[in-house]
Length: 88
Image 1: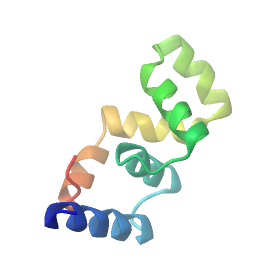
Image 2: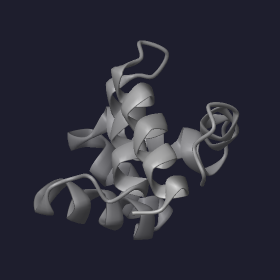
Image 3: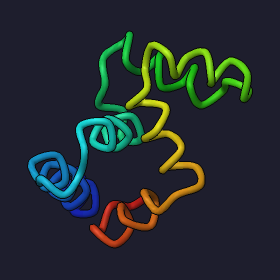
Image 4: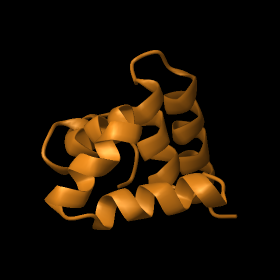
């Protein structure tokens, strides 16, 4: 394992242990680094592919996840992740 990979693992672990992220934001982090199980990975992939109409319907069942995805797409979540040193 490269030194860079080890550093990434440490940074992801710190982010997931921190209280500066919501539970759904932590799921975005896990999703981006391939750390979710099969169902959650499929859910996040489907959320990311959904058009606006379907995303609105999915928000009825997964409101926190859709909000976190919105923060990832158009908000500051990516910026915050980069500021925490996460290589996204």
